[in-house]
Length: 242
Image (cartoon, rainbow, N blue to C red):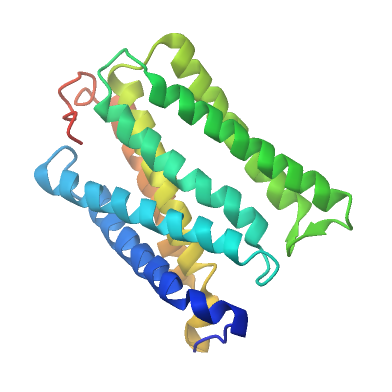
């Protein structure tokens, strides 16, 4: 168990520990948020803590990725990924804060941000493809997949802006899938991406995959509930204080 850090990383260890702590809080409150009653006091409490911890996690990750470029592998992709997480939780949070059927400057800025992130992943993918198929430890298809995913998000944002906002189930669906997708990033990054710091007996364990993929299962469950039910079809289903 444990891993050795290069000497150049030592000055950043306090920030790394803050990043880890924020990730633990995000994962715990993420599971709590998706399991309690939607719109209730506990859902709002856990959701608020989840958003704040995800923003802290992403902020630390982005700063560390920039600071450790050339020191640790995989940092160029982490810069783009670090921008993607606050975009996801920010647009998810604003989906239920914004009055139904309206958009504002925030949504337009978010669209610009995700377009930049998509362009960043695409650029890294092209560099990888023309540099032996890999860049910074990742194959070119890794960057291209994320470029496509973020381009799809940009397309959905553009649709919201052009439409002038969302109402009813569509509004709540936007909140749910974006929060759950951000949750998946946190859970997947830890349970699958950090097995090297776990005991050897846990490496490749089936339950780590279950814990990592559970946010996607919760996302599917709640999206189905929203689409086939009547509870979330009015503006009062989730309070703007969500």
